[in-house]
Image 1: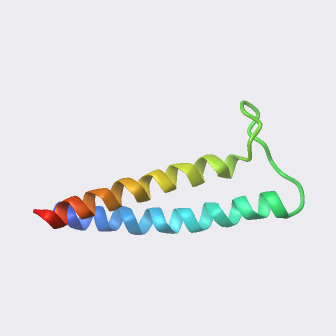
Image 2: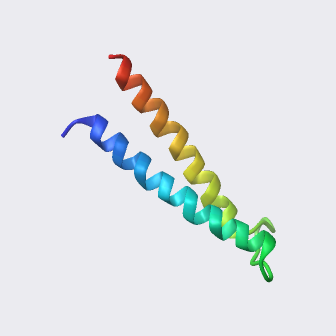
Length: 69
């Protein structure tokens, strides 16, 4: 299978993950109560949001690099 297809799939899943974890993060900051990670004290959805943002950036970089070849 073409690597470009895999990058598109990863991009689509990571965009969905950004939207989902972003909505959870919004609810944590502006909703009722928060659930913090015991180790670091930040809301747990913040870590997922950061991971999915990183995946969006990496997959977009890969797609743009594949476009130039």
